[in-house]
Image 1 (cartoon, rainbow, N blue to C red):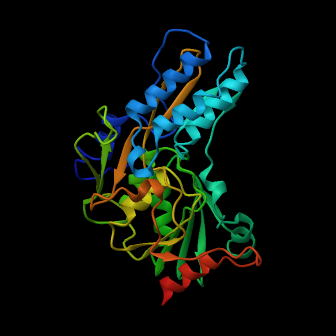
Image 2 (image 1 turned 45 degrees about the vertical axis):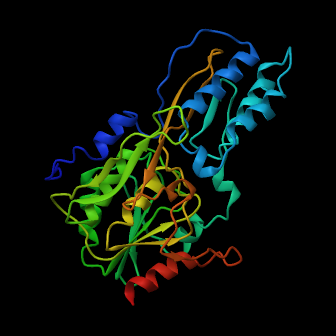
Image 3 (image 1 turned 30 degrees about the vertical axis):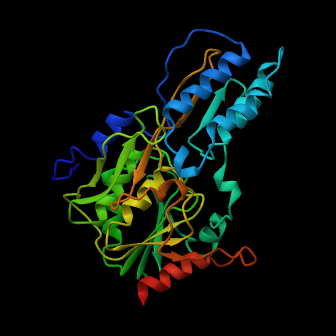
Length: 340
């Protein structure tokens, strides 16, 4: 199995070690003194978020006011489910799907994807475009437009990416005029799968962004920028035009992918703005044993802008028409764009 020629340190791997030593679906836990008292757990969670959360200023969140509002919902004798509702409601004020409370009986989620239009319908793709589509590892793919275009669907960054699978797929489509990578409704997963895909679309080492981590008492205190760099794969690559399809269901690692893709000249983003999730989460444990996580870092683009948390905008905006399920307008636009 071939690896990249360049040494990517400091690069994405180093940044992840520095920030979390983990993908976006895992947590660090800190042991705390046991207590089931509602006020104790409320104060502990509020204080942890106050000291470490990274997006108060960007989102204009008045966290002290949130404390005042939700502390009034506490009362003597409240049961666990009532306490969960209060703490989960407080965390949802962050408007961040990387901020979750996890109890044995429930998990809190903001659900940004349900607050925006859906732009992907799998049956439309499978029934009217890829009737004979094939599966190779994590990817669903086939030719389009008389073999002029390659279509590749990657449904989740939680699915492992192997060089063998990518070699097979990109070899199959090496004679096409362009490639469509469909990341709509991809809610993220393992951020370490971002670079192995993107590095197949470039022959140059590329600086694509920065990470900064909250590191002080003030809401605006952050570490020095850590470079987010892409290498280039020393093997089979695809350097023709690529269209990446995104929408509001494209979250977390997919937002990171979209930020990095904007720095590559042969990639065009099409569809709708991603769901966000630019901050990497870290977490801990409440005194009562429940666990939590929230965003402690920010992802910046190559110009130092931190729009990723609100979502990465497409280069070309197209919406899916739910009144006509035999056609995918976003996919059609991508095909048209690539064969013009």
